[in-house]
Image 1 (cartoon, rainbow, N blue to C red):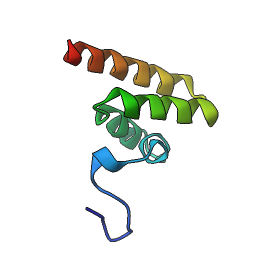
Image 2: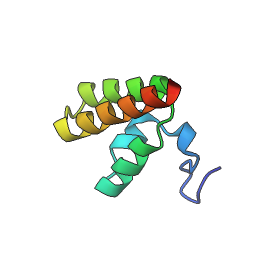
Image 3: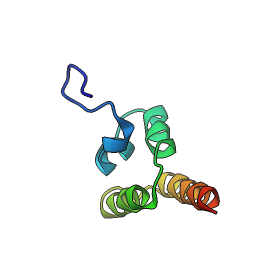
Image 4: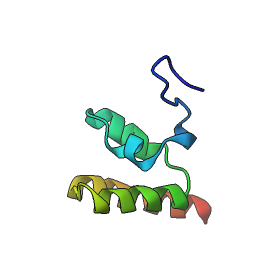
Amino acid sequence: MSNPDGQTTDASKLSPEQRIEPPNTRLINAGIVTINDMETLRACVAYENANQQRIPILRRLKDRASEIRAQEN
């Protein structure tokens, strides 16, 4: 599903850049919360490490990884 700007509104199809590069921290948080698998999470961590290396974002991603692992068990 796309919005009029041509951007996807399906969270499962967001790229790492779309998840963690929005100008608004609420959108960054939403992008991280909607990560439901380790493959997507690893891609976001790799993207962040290669680009911004923001510690608060990496911490949120680490916390989300813990939540995903807990759900898998």
